[in-house]
Amino acid sequence: MRVKRRLRWAVIPLGIATAIALSSCSTTELNGFLPGFTDDGVQATNHTERVSALWVNSWIVLLIVGVITWGLMGWAAIAYRRRRGQSGLPVQLRYNMPIEIFYTIIPLILVVGFFALTARDQTILETQYDDPDVCVTAIAKQWAWDFQYNDDAKDCAAGEDAVWSMGVQAQTDEQGNITNDLPVLVLPVNQEVKIKLTSRDVIHSFWIIDFLYKKDMYIGHDNYWSFTPTRTGEYDGKCAELCGDYHSMMLFKVKVVEPAEYEAYLDSLRAADQTGDINDAYDRLQNFPGTGATSDSEGEH
Image (cartoon, rainbow, N blue to C red):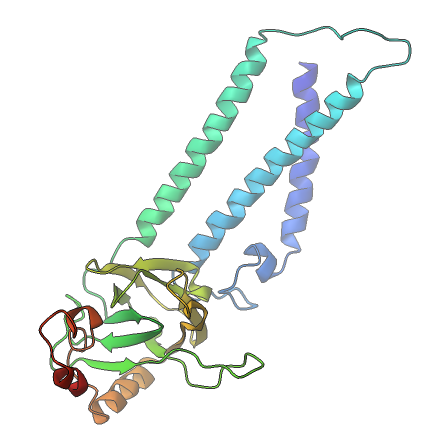
């Protein structure tokens, strides 16, 4: 009973101190110093806060467990230290069933709890929109990105009305400053977006940093990612999978704009005659050599 009472009195001030500390935190601190939030707490997508909450709450639980564990270790080291005049081994404790059950059950509860919360959030994050407002195909290539805005959003299928933009990898000067325009993915704010992720060559990974999520891109297997951008602005993106010599130059930008500006951007691509489906035409795995295509037909693309 004394031990339980002592633990209770130790946990109460710890909980009060944690509540006080959290109440005085900024938005950045409340979200675990993760990007994706403005100073007033507006998240970048409808899922950003869910990811940060899982991250922060996991660390809070782990910190509490760590503080209790470190405290018990310190207490044991002091309470059972060798005192002056003592010799030999201290009294040994064996087969203390309550303690053994405690340090078996508590870690099990923590592991099951972390798994359940992660599985719950992952299920929500991986749920795809059946009929999104916008469906974009993001095509990874060594070492840049192409973006195709499909005319059939429901099935993410490209037709004659689809439009696209092609990008080249980042170029830098001697100081490492980027000297060219990066590929740009334009998305409408507050509209359901579904991104079809595919690769032309090797495994890549599509990562919009402020959105706090990334997904791999494979050859012959399409991945999908659904979300709703909730804040206009410009965001950085990059490949998060080591994909070759110039992996670090595989960068892109994301611009979340108002729906009218998004439609105007699509019109500008149509005016530039960047229409149709570029997936097959620019897939190097289906082109010369090895597929029967000639160098002349390669040049046509």
